[in-house]
Length: 243
Image (cartoon, rainbow, N blue to C red; front, top):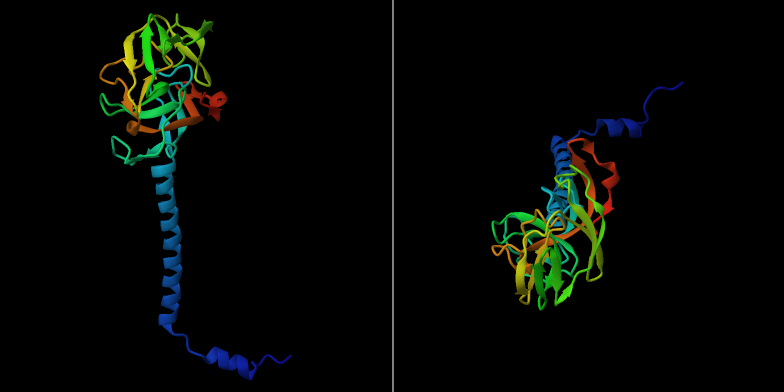
């Protein structure tokens, strides 16, 4: 067996390797990786800033629709461009429909709150003796039973009621008539919001909140992607659409 190299093989092995070419190749590889990482970070920032955001529910104000400890996906692009660390949208190109569940930068204290839209510009809303009137007509309510004791803060004696506004059917809860509100004419470009748990909700019935400009809406709650309480993960609420 001939183990000697051919002339071409010997010539190739004799060609000197330029260290600068090796460094150049290494830096090209690093630059390509940095571009990939930078593109991924930029895409994540665009999604987080303009398209979708995760939001954690704190407190009982939207029970039984949303529970304390629910994590929801919020669509930010539906109504406008709401940048981080701002109290209002930079641009608005739409508004919510009656019945939507939205995340709002509260006019009262600048805290993010989650509420249901009960009235839009041009509507007249009144809350009296626990019942909600929209444009002079009372929203329907049907008692569907008592609340679950200790479920994220719901009171033991509260009742759940099937209600409807616009095209949305949803469930509210209360144990008493709760605070009311005189008739409020919702100005154009504003909304009137209520929490589904009417006993414990800082909403448009509070004059410090009142009718809210749509520029303060951060987005619409779409679905629960995770939920947890003191007992652990609530698996039955995973991927639960917000109604």
